[in-house]
Image 1 (cartoon, rainbow over the protein chains, first blue to last red):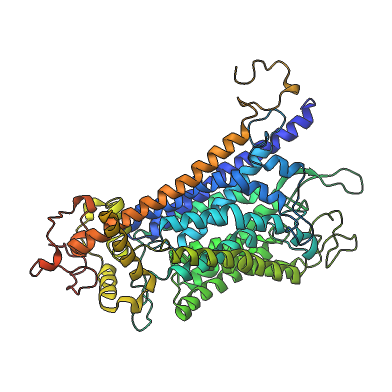
Image 2: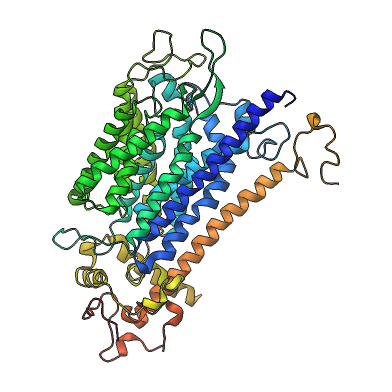
Length: 491
Length: 104
């Protein structure tokens, strides 16, 4: 830090990431607002606190081990090499002097925080799918799992210039269609399957009931806020200034996470055009439904994100329109066919859109260099210069790894264990009475004496049909809770 | 003295925090606090739900819902089963109220 230009470059980079972190904070504000808007009045405080506590729990665990995983797991380990131990992994250990204020380091903290904010997002995506019936305990464990373990493993593999998926398969996913959204969608899908639908969501003949949000305006406002935070997310995925060489020897540019060139200006085009495509498509499909139009905008960005560092804006527009349209149709097909109750459409907006976005980028960007060649790497497909090449096979397999291997499978296993332990779902009577009723009280006490139309349906369903319309785990939970209570009293 | 006593030679300064050398102890304490927090939260939530299920089974859902919270519920200790014509618990049919109307 003794020459002025060098110091300015370092301090600019430090400040750049710091600003992205502040902007990305809005994503979590948006998710909390959105989920609370979707939840019914009797579940508002539980819904808010479940998601808000992602912040401290994922932060501390990302400090303990998440950041270290990112640098240590880039070879698998066991796929292209062993567990990595170098200066980066040493700096990311929780007891490292560089994981604290240090006179000779300006980057570790802000870079750690940028990745941490991605971690919150991944966990928060899962939160919305299981609202109004999941136990907070179970969600906290899932949040730590995806926020500080599974998503950061996939980042090490597919969102780092030296990750084995990048070096071997040519995987390309610049703004995290798969790395954040597909993995979170896969995690949410498994959680939705294991936790089961909300009481009354599906009638005795399989009919689907629409459970209305308590405040649709709050829901849309939340999505608007998520859009705003997404700007910070895009900027945070870039390296703001880097010498990328070139024939003259020196050429400074912004790069994507793989250290391949892009520009902040270019991704600004693409962010807005993919948002526009998504909103236009889902507005038509949903006949102007506010929830789906806003969600479609988000799905449009997510669908184009894998290649938004390089797409033409009108390519981003078209991809941003096609992906949410498919996700919208898939959401209702899955709901109808498999009776899965994804309360906010997380699996569709993030999971299906992210998956498709990665697959499409593999075709559209076929032949582009994916990253600088790492020492000893031998890519399946290489450019004429010998660099790993973006290709459809690499991205199709990558999408499966993100959604299925690192998203769905670990979540399904953990949720099954939690279900066995009786920690996955709240007791039936607690769900019927409302998750706020015992713990918090009514969030809107001035309207407490009115029964909503759906509550009548919900109670009638639970009373008349019992376990026929709800998973066995619900009734089992009631019995377990009663037994535990009696046991405690006799002690 | 807990750490630095001068900033006059910044090139030679490393960590800025006090008690350098205690990092591993700090990590061990923090990890223990984190795990302990999860255990305490799980226990507290389980107890909360046990108490809620007991209460709702005893007084019936009709009295539990829309009371503005369990703290406002009048629990007179009379079991529902001995209450003639009383409201039903979960599992006992009860006529649903009219949507949108105040509950009596």
